[in-house]
Image (cartoon, rainbow, N blue to C red; front, side):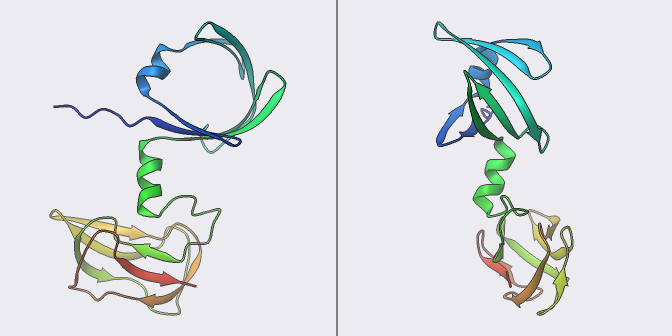
Length: 163
């Protein structure tokens, strides 16, 4: 049995909603030029312009009928990272690194007080016979290592705290 793709989570200004891949495919979009679109939905015609785009089109400024909205689109991977506590690492200060799944800590690559840079390995976690490198998603300083090599951990367990 195939799993259904998760709907996209959309935040537009103060509005939050989801749209499924099926709804997106069924929408009547017409591209009228670079960043200019026409949409017809539920017998309503809307013109919109994308005036600014960043982060691989996941964040943008969209003008609809004279109003501008900051729009953020979160796909299935983004939503999973949110649930694991790895979302928006570059825009907020992370305080903890948690286990994304149950497993066995094979190796710890950091020490307390160490300065780490975005992309540095924190530890290696073995789960389902695979070695997974847990990386830091922003520059930080290691406050406390809460696990030891050889220790079994549960999903969501705090592995390392950061300053």
